[in-house]
Structures are given as structure tokens and as C-alpha cells.
Image 1 (tube, rainbow, N blue to C red):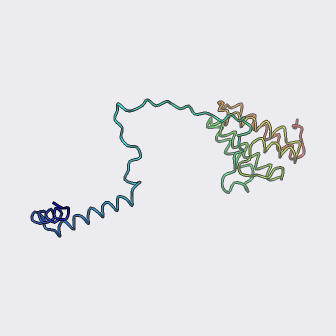
Image 2 (tube, helix red, strand yellow; image 1 turned 90 degrees about the vertical axis):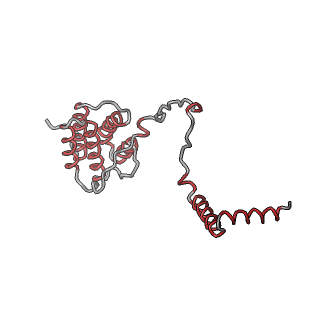
Length: 196
């Protein structure tokens, strides 16, 4: 029997069982579903195919590694919030005082450093740039106004220890930052010695 005769007899037998127009509609429906599946291919495939339990391999726990760079190199200066660059240092200090009163000393230290950065930007000692590190801040401030180097460097060290070395913050850190902010204000005002 040739293929053409077999095909003719198979189609005739199928036509006796099911009406041929219904078969044509079913074939068109299957083709449309295949085209939709092909078009939306990634969406309907699961991200992870299910695995049988016996084929699973034990997973190793990965430790998160901290970058090997030094703290000072990665310690970014906290940027002022939106619309905060034109605000004088007073509101930042009151926020720092509220944070310190709540026992949130690390955040209070960060706010005091922000106020110091705003003060330095306001007097033109530094030009604030996004992504500026504490080291860059200290270097630029020392280059433009050498007397401010000591309080700014000490404040940057405290900030880096708390926020990048993850040391616990205490009231002593907040008091020291307050003293450094006062010292910076005195230096910028031209009175480096503490008043008696």
C-alpha cells in the first residue's frame, strides 16, 4: 500500500467518526495555543524545575565577605537629604539631640557629621559631591582650611568606626561628636581655643 492510498483511507475513516470541519477547528485551536505558548515562552516556564529529593545536592552556606579595603577608603560621607543642603546646621543638631535622647547614638553621630559637612560646605571649605568618602572630606577640608583638619578627621574616624566597622555606639561617642562639632564651629569662627 502506498502512502497516498493509506492517507486517503485514514482521512476517510476519521471523517466517518468525527466531522472533518470539527477536526479542522481543533487543529487550528492547537496551533493557536502552540503559538501563544511560543510567544510567551519565559513566563510560563517555572524558574526552577522541580527536583526529586534523591537528586538534590546539599547546599553550601556562603559567607558574606566584606571587602578587603580599609574602612576609610569605603566610608562615604552621609549625604544631606533632599532639600537639606540649604538648611542651617541647627535643625540637624536638634534631630541629633532627639536621636541621642532616644538612645540611637549611631544615628545621632551620623546627623552630627551631616551638620558638620553642611557647615563646611556653607563656608566653602569643601565642595560636596555625591559619593565623597570621609577621607576625601578630611583631605579637601584640610587643604582648603588647615585648622579644621583635626576636628573633621576625629569626627570622620568616629563615624567610620560606628557605621563601617559596626562597633556599638554609646553616649560617649555622641558627646565626643558634639564636642567636635563645637570645636569646628569655633575654628571656623576664628576662635580655636575653647572659651574659659
